[in-house]
Image (cartoon, rainbow, N blue to C red; front, top):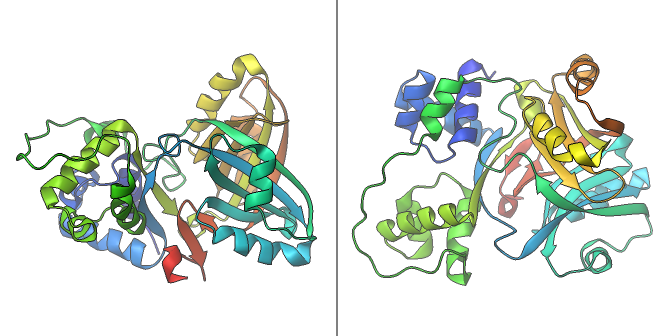
Length: 336
């Protein structure tokens, strides 16, 4: 069973994904060894994974929010097929098993119809589909997200983890690539997708670079926004069993204000503005149905400017960013 210390560790990693166990222990009030042991247990049990991600914008890509309505008996195979594609993320089956929701990355100059024809399975079992462009994410990867259903760390503790620290002047090394990621960075990104907290020594082995060059390249990519970090979590393993997507219609003048307000809700790990009939979507995680109802009737109801909404209740989760859900555990796709 996971406790408050586990939640503090998770929250701390949301704030600083690559923070040292020593520093994280100082902030959460535990020894370096205890924090390392707890984190390794969470990762080994498939409850959470820290992953490094390439920023789609820096790669000349965009993300599409895709909803597929399928025959209930065929939704599973179609969803499994989608989840295994590297350009597909955050895949789940919702609405009683008849709806698939996922995100798809594609080149920015790819048209909507081309995305559907190229990336979605051609199956007669698909009854209807919608593809909307993700215009803006209000909860940036690596700095916000669901940290155990409630605020485990105080503002002061968060500030201790996120405060900028002086960076020592590195030892001169051969020139590295420009800030935008290149093909030479592919082994680095692949290693970070497997373990976003991999040590500089481990990343040096994966890339063939020196540890010093790895450290400098990480700093360059992070500063340029080409490299971000995500925390994949199976919330149900922490006692939060209800996962839903809210499709909201909001007044355009209040779009940004409402998006930012929802992103501050502890129940919402992901909020984004989208194209289409619903111009805002929010993922909501709660302990159970009564808690979700209380959220709808209190915090959400208090947000001014929402004209209408639709709810998709998740029935089965298949993928988080780059992690597949396999037998109730988060795993790297290569292990499936």
